[in-house]
Image (tube, rainbow, N blue to C red; front, side, top):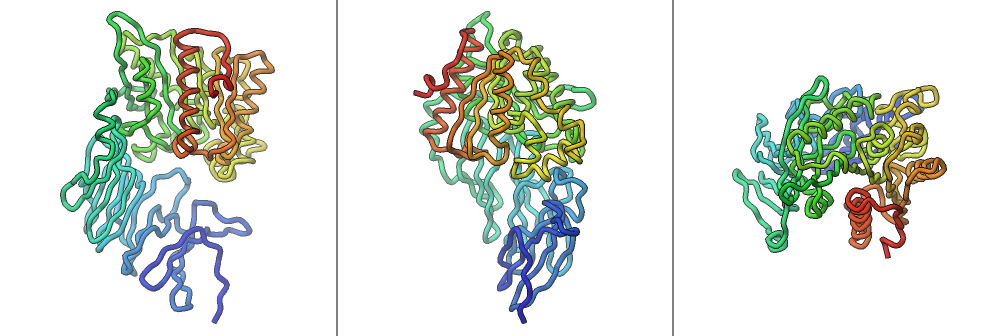
Length: 454
């Protein structure tokens, strides 16, 4: 007998059946990314396994189903946990950290957790324990026959392939010959108190002339539930090699800590999280007297682009900024972005047309405060943080007589800084280097985007 199949967001094989995740509907609207109904389709029949749960089926070994999320969430931004279902629901991992990825093999579960700047591998075989721990970032995971295959990078080396079968073995060294010829900079870790929290920070120290001072670039990660730490960021290494200090911190709202830490940014973005960044820079200056307080730049992508826009409207510390694919006005982000209807309503607040946050937390309305030159970089194919965000900020700043520049890439989605073509990324790096060289080192007027890109 035919049945009406619901629209589903994802599915996976489960033996000779299919498990699907269907956004749970409450009235006429689906409960976007917060609640799901989970079905099993097998032999022409449909069985509802779960209704209105906040986890999704993500893997199966044919006997059991692996579920990531929670039984019920208040916020989409909450940490993900892990469960296994074989007719009975059993917890695999229930915090305090988030779960980034997981695979089920031979009744074992391998999974990854971000932890204060590192990403570790766990194994559940009846109980969960960390099995691969270190100052590294595991960003790829697959598992079969009880073994795990991993992609691991560090702050000074891009990724290579590893096998874990009780011990960790490196399989490839494709980048060894290249890094044998490159100078890289190991991050120096520091912790600092910011208001009511302890925050992690790092910095790269360039090669310095004795007694000389060096300019500083502050990097802000995306998210806000992103994380910095022991991962390779090309722009950071590039700028350290050009003689800049590079500073980066995990302000409240970041991943890699407990859930309360992550949720503190909701409806307060740009407030205490920005103070965490400023306090981190202040602590850094105590550690490095050769850092030049009069030559500090700031940059970031996505949420980091928002924070760059925000920083230049809220502080005179920064003498130049590069904002990439950022946000300047939360109301149009809510209405235009592919995630605005659920993301912005959670992070900025409900009732966008009446909520003061949509104006109060938008850099656009503080444009008159901007004193530093800013370069806005945006790609037209970005539907996550749409192009209007940078164009509006640029036009308003120029209309006020501020020093603002814009570089528009026709191609490239939200992740164009990482996934764009080599030619595309090369142009970005050139803009990046030239702008900070001109504004933080040479103190030159003007910036011709087209001339730089020729």
